[in-house]
Amino acid sequence: MRIIAFLIEVIGWLKIVASPLVVGSFIGGMIYYIWRNETGLVSGVLIALTGLNTGIIWATNIWRKHGTMNFLSKTNATPDLDNLVRENKS
Image 1 (cartoon, helix red, strand yellow):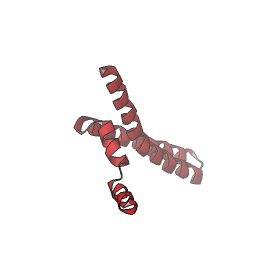
Image 2 (cartoon, helix red, strand yellow; image 1 turned 180 degrees about the horizontal axis):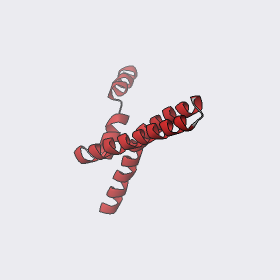
Image 3 (cartoon, helix red, strand yellow; image 1 turned 90 degrees about the vertical axis):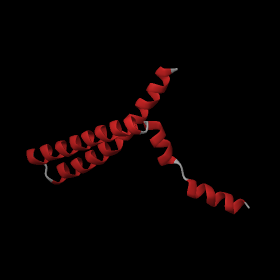
């Protein structure tokens, strides 16, 4: 059972890492698209790696403090919308 819980936390960690990585890769790709030379390539890769590094640090801190799935479940919850739906049904 502990292995399954650990694997679920790892999946949550990967989801958190993916967000800054995608943003960094997009920005790095746009920079390379604008400057199609070695400088653009190096800048784009550095920005993508910065996104990866930021994601790793962020996800590790969240895992230590809250747990990744606890964090993700809070960000996916919509209590404001739940109250709105209850009010409309009444």
